[in-house]
Image (cartoon, rainbow, N blue to C red; front, side, top):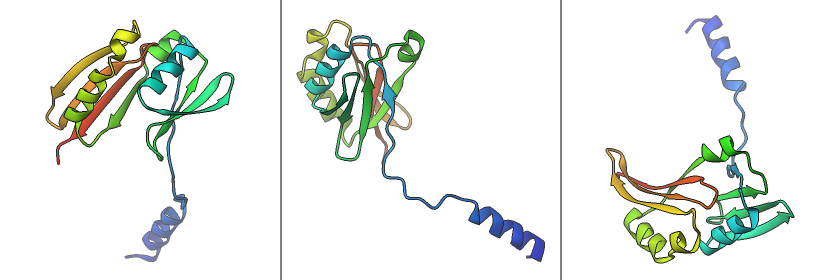
Length: 138
């Protein structure tokens, strides 16, 4: 390798960030903040209240998202989240057993679909945010 290419390669390598990421958290809005808080608690997510207009919901100890008392129709109508689960069939059974679609007027469930990459089912929350629950092929 020429000296010039070697130096360019070293410069590129040293310009990369060296941190270790611990999590990534999205922010989602709510048309009715209190209704959405109740919905996510009923779904089994653990709430930590941050303030009167924001809560952190933990799906697992390392997976979480922020729910905000904020509603912008175009934003919320176009928000989608994908949660990878270990067994989408079991997840679907547990999800339907909660009967959240009967307790919350705007919640919609869509059964499991088989895709080339795996399978997934869907849920719209009370504000219309679309959740994908999926399992990848091994």
